[in-house]
Every structure is written in structure tokens, then in C-alpha cells.
Image (tube, rainbow, N blue to C red; front, side, top):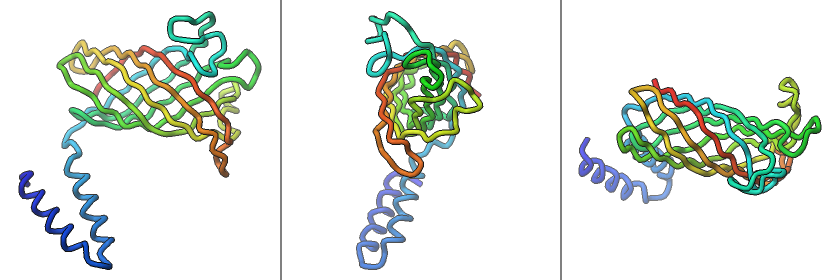
Length: 204
């Protein structure tokens, strides 16, 4: 379907749906319009990474360059990427984020929208989304999910340099913020910090 035909169809449907009692059909038209911009083909990717947190609540690590004691984090990003847009699931764990006590690690599980600018093998991108942040997670991996998490957001970007069809290196910088929302499944905890990381990207 051409862009002109799609536009005419949408305009016609919107005019018809403006009558009372047609809100359900309006939702269907908007859903169809959204699906029309989804890329027909998207590449999957997996990026294991290693980095450290700084700024905000990070202890002894005020900024990216002024960091007296780096607290290492590790994790993985998994998702799909079309030519411009994609979806990413990001998991990371920072042991002893606040100090060396038992329950002072940070776990993040985020769902992000990813927008990239394809420039051949050099691919800058931005990401942003929502998810769960556990500011005082246990260092014991078997206990890390036993308590409530906080609702959080993240936003940032980076650069992927591809060295072939399916392999590259990614540098990434993003900010995480736990909003302090208190509900049945949210602890109401607050947290604010940045994460810098580098990883290997495998596309398939």
C-alpha cells in the first residue's frame, strides 16, 4: 500500500469514527497505523557488557573521570534492531554499589526503545525506557529477587562499531533513576546513578 493510499484511508476512517460510539474502531485504526511503520525485517542482537557506575548515589565515584573507587557492574542487552528503531531488554548487576555490606548491590531490569542512525559500520544510538531497579539487592544471587523492587527509568546512548556482518564493539552511557513510587509491587526506594560500559555485540 502506498503512503498516499494509506493516508487517504486513515483520513476517511477518522472522519467516520468521529461519530459517537465509534471509539473501538478508532483504536483499531490507530493500531493499524502504528503497525504500518514497523520494519519488515529486524536483526536480533546480544551484547554482554562490563562497566561501572558513577555519579548520584555511587560511593567514591563522583563522575566519569573523577572516580576514586570503581564498583564494577556486568550484564547483558538483548533485543531487535531495524534500520532505525528497535526494542531492547537490559539486565545489569553492580555488586557492593553503596558499600561492602550484604545487601548493598544494585540490580536493574529495563525495557527500552532504541533509535539508531545507521552509518555503515558506525552506528550511534539512543535508548530510553522503564523497568525495575533494586537499589539494595543482596549479593547472594539466590536471594536477589526475594524483596520488592523500585519502579525506574533509564535514558542514554552509545556507539556500536561493527567489524563484520555479525560482530562489533559497543560503548554505552546511560542514567538510571528509581522514582520512589510506592505500590504493592514497588518498594518506593529511590536511586539515581549513571552507568558506563563496554561490550561485545553479536547480531543474528
